[in-house]
Length: 381
Image 1 (cartoon, rainbow, N blue to C red):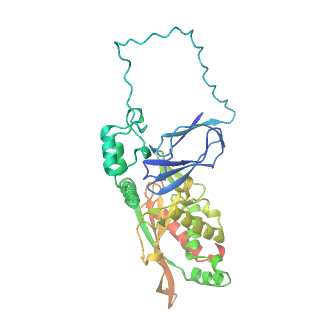
Image 2: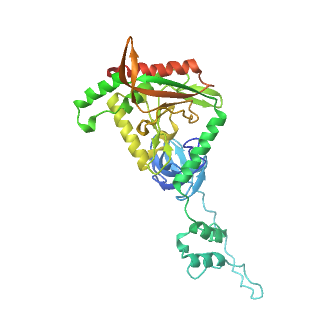
Image 3: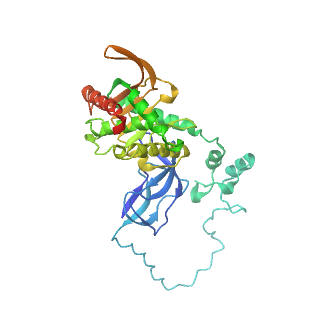
């Protein structure tokens, strides 16, 4: 039997609230199936399972808040026999029931109010004062009776999810800066060739099929990361592990506030049109709160763009266990010397925040040069 547990959906997650089960006992599951929905500071996340078998038992109830690693379900592997139900012991020959002794009172029974809801007097009084329906509460007292703390929690003002996300981001980024020896590199890239190619390509396309510069930059970043050592992978307990594929995290600003960076899997294999479609889909689902758990945990390097804000450059903070983050500023026209002539060309500043335990400045510089090289030949992306 395997135990399916509450997954960690990032370095900033400590617990999650189970909001929905999408499977029931007896159902067969396979790798990649969505089996539950969990609410975190990042929103509602669809949880995938990564083993095959049959759901033997659900071990958590909808509405429960559970820490990372807490058991959610018991999964019976393929070929494993279902556990036998315990046999009922034979009932012993019944003896005549003893008559109750009127002089000895029987065991005290828990008083249940006339409404059928077990609650302490203080809980009932507070619920009446606040207009709270006791029937809508789940008790945490003995025998699941509703106690004063349950009513107080129900009447408390719910936490602002934006504030909760900010707290989670702050904790994760503070930990990253404390524990990861960051180094930073900045590189100015001539975008004129990419800008001209993009304009010519889009001119022959309907609006819904047009490409954005972000797709070219994402594609160039993924290709350069796949060819570079030390920037694409995870730093874990036993050191740096280079990833064989590029699962490119895309930083997405949420409309209600906060930031999330789900990953586009195998981004180095996606041609431009597929990359554009993946970006549109990822941003839409992130803002609608419909991401999968693997999209929050599989990222091997992250790309963040502040181009729409007009900011020229940014020094980012690495999202552990990743070891690199690429940040892109706003493309701007600048005078550029080409030989003995100066012309105005579109340029952009790209920065790299990297983990010095996995790479060094020379490796990082070659990686940024690789992004530049790909953008000079957009027709090959």
